[in-house]
Image 1 (cartoon, one colour):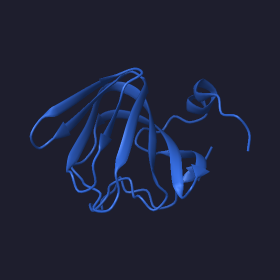
Image 2: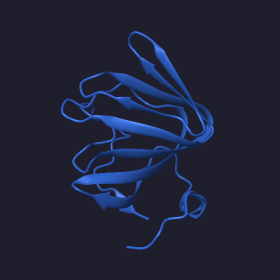
Image 3: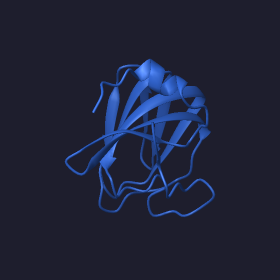
Length: 119
């Protein structure tokens, strides 16, 4: 395992909503993703999901409120909670979640990524 420089890692890909695996530990993935625009409403029945904003601003819309995240802030979406990530401009996030977590959770659509790429 090598150290990861976040700026270099984010510079290595351009596609929004296409997470990359940066590391694995104890059955968990550390994923990096560039987000832009709205994603899809979804939930993860059995997994919590940590969103850490490295660059930019992210709104996590929940059914009962919005969570506004700026650089250096994170929020854990509890398992089973429906959420809609929205990035008005490009946003860089670090995600921490079980390796089995599908990016669209219980929702299958054109944004579902089954085969994640490693950095």
